[in-house]
Length: 172
Image (cartoon, rainbow, N blue to C red; front, side, top):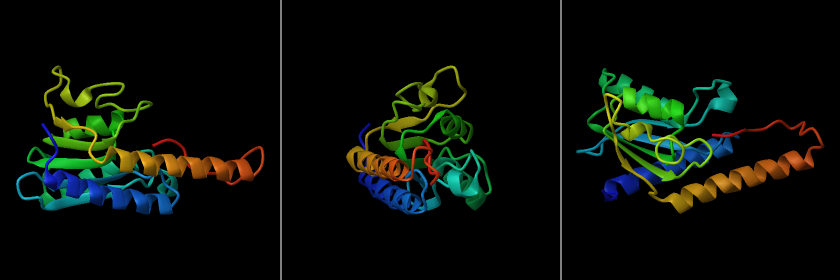
């Protein structure tokens, strides 16, 4: 199924959130959970893993958590999630467990993607819930943002000495 105009609008918001994450030195991933029928935003998130020093500081995790609190329920089957990068196994598992109805993502993640690249967790018929998947929405913009972030990160590490004393990010 193709992306709707609403999906593209939500992906643009997710890209804004990803840019804010990059400005904080986080891997630039943003996510928005919204009601599929109305477009009402229930939760947003961007990566916080580096700053918070928490492995679960992924954009999807934070957006789902905020959404569940907003509606007072853990079931998000009436919702869509727009995220700039294909979810990892942890986040894909969360999306299945939260019963998210639709997942719209931008760039594919050949190293850790658990929606289509490495695994197909969201559509695995052995699981008790499956999500509708809409891949590649504003993929070029999302990919460009990620590539620029990691290019700058590598340049910064290279200029700080052989041990990369400046510290820095890591993968998504």
